[in-house]
Length: 443
Image (cartoon, rainbow, N blue to C red; front, side, top):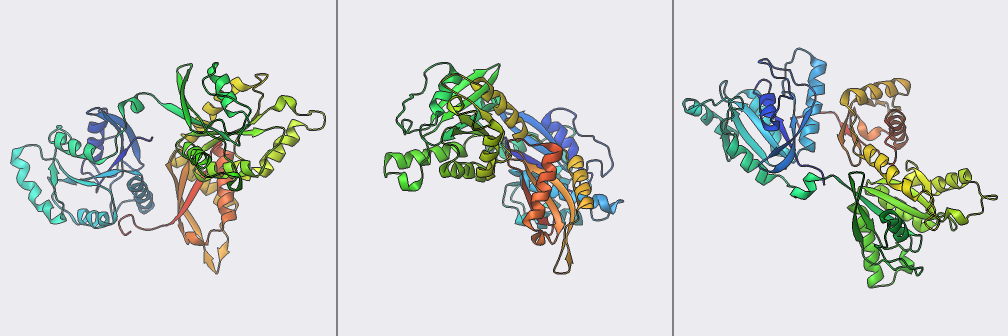
């Protein structure tokens, strides 16, 4: 479960970075008494009243900045922060009063379907309370007079904010547990692999297919790292699924994939990749999960007539949805390379949660467009302006463009391949989304 996010938005010089530093309880954002200091999104993880969440500091929205190009970048960053956040703090300046920019921001928030908290900053004492009444023109049900600099009025704001955002259980916050779903057709060795990893007979193993009917969770700790191993029922084709228990088993396996971080797809080396393996691969890819392919029973394959290189190539041809996934040949019976599985899971998971800085991903966009510009479609020139990563688990990138709907899927694939070439993301699906470039406050 990801931590909930709260974005601080507003016009320049209202104290967004000061409030950000106050909430994260350390001086992470640069604060100066002039507008335009914050340009990129700044993230800070914090704990408040035993609740953990992420705060996002954004640049100030302005219609007449000194640098027109910078305006576009800052707006896109605000746009992204609003999309990412579970709740928003709309910060206003109680000393300078209500401005036309505040009204523009407020008009745009009518389209945002998430909690918005109107905080009036720089109310440094009771004598300044009269300054807040003009802000009721914005139509907010409740205003929060605060002083971020002097830590006044934050208690009520934060209490109501924490009530409005999703919370994680304390145990989930304390330990990062990588959830690993072991999936595959019946009788390919899923439960045996888990028993080897646990070094004990924790899961029932039987040669009869379909022994595991429920998803079985087992907590494993190795070198101070924690894994939740999810043994799933084998997934059969619909024509072979009987009503009742086995139908429920298939649904349980799909649920296990959905709630996992990393999917370990176990394939039978003797039978090779069959149609049902490709369907499971499709499920994992569709759900945006990190993946590892384990080819089990490799010890009984005829090595003279079937080289591993050829077998590997054949696997990737058939599992077209998982060509980004690493492949490991194993044998549970002879305990061959079973101890390498968790190491590869670690590597894949690190790629799954990786975030690329906006400056680097934008530099890549500039290079790939210069090398191969988007084609002209129906006499319309597609332009790609700006790219940013908006999500991990899986990595998702948004590209702001002119005529985004005219971009062919082959050009999207070209962008994804270039992202992989520069930043790997081994074992992870990479998702890109093209959006029409527009003013952040004219949605």
